[in-house]
Length: 113
Length: 115
Image (cartoon, rainbow over all chains, first blue to last red; front, side, top):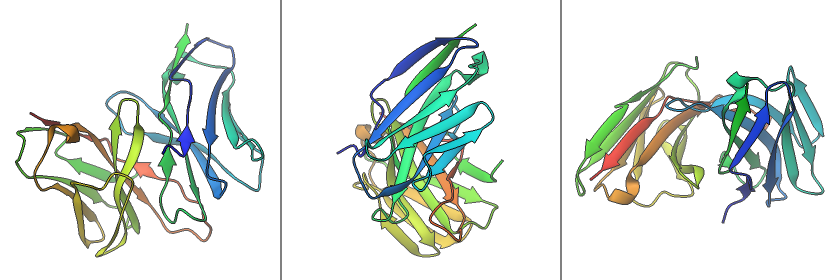
């Protein structure tokens, strides 16, 4: 059973606008969340993370929001750039998952110039 | 770069043959992971290691075994490859941290095709 879900397989956004990627989770024991970016034929690269003690974390153009009551997190990219076109994975781990990280199925973002 | 090397990067094999994928790190990180990536499934954990000779199963461990005889190397073995094991395999590492955090760093992947 998928514990981390990304329900939008793809997203297209105009350059300069905001990209919002969403992620839902089912395990209430998850307490650490991450976003990864993946280009074709490359390994995923770490983007940004957030601990469950926070509800927002910002790093440059990237902001992650966490809504624990809704078991939902989102990644905002502002402004979006063509180089942001990639597949984005959210991931989570928790107190009851040991050292295991669970990943969503990914959202393919296309930023249109 | 996180100092992770996967080999081979590409392999084509036949059903029933054994296959070993190697992950080598130069970071002296404690934790090493093997994931597979498939369309519609994202990244799924096969096995991971938390130290030399210490390993544990992940979500999709059936048909796979692992070994870690040295800190720097983590081997994934398919004893008898099947077509369902055609996938892209990623190794990841993570250092020990004082908290429950610490992100994974991934290798570039090994594409395996089982005919």
